[in-house]
Amino acid sequence: MYFECLLDAILGERQIFHIIDCSICGFEEVYYESSTAKQLIGRACSHCNFVQRFDD
Ligand SMILES: [Zn+2]
Image (cartoon, rainbow, N blue to C red; front, side, top):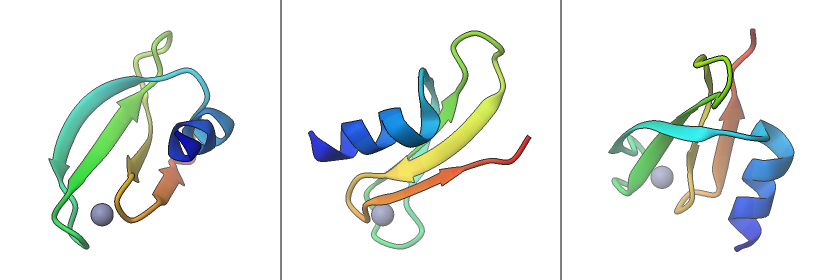
């Protein structure tokens, strides 16, 4: 559940846009969009503990 807290802190309110295979570990890499503005806000892989917020 730590990873979800990390996502809350970095990405804030979000919903899943799509899921691809992570290029590093092959697990799920999730792309998130803003639930209000419908813009891509970032991506994350819980297996790699990787979170990236896209710049505006
Ligand atoms: Zn990964």
